[in-house]
Amino acid sequence: MSLMNFYIAFHNPIWISILSLALFFPVRQLIWVLYVRKKQKTQGDVSELEKKFLKKRANFTSILLCIVFSYLYVDQIFN
Image (cartoon, rainbow, N blue to C red; front, side, top):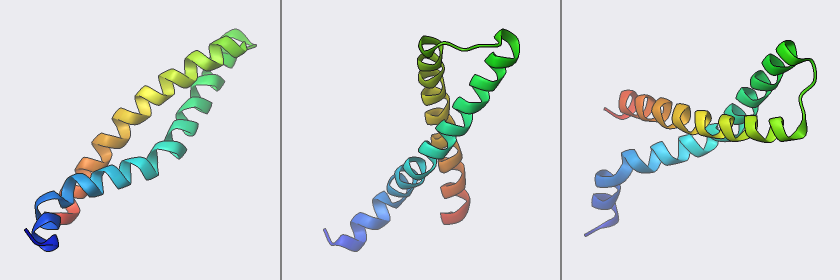
């Protein structure tokens, strides 16, 4: 199997992974900041424990968001 055949068979998952990884860190930071600001509006002060919990929540949300966006984007561009 040549490298070209391998690329044609697996180019979508490779590009989805690369784009998801590139988007993950800025999206996670943006979502985390929005969560913390929302919590600060309702509570006033946010503890470090709550910030860690919100960071985990932002991780989960950004993973889902980045994978879905990357899939849709790669599907539109390459197909």
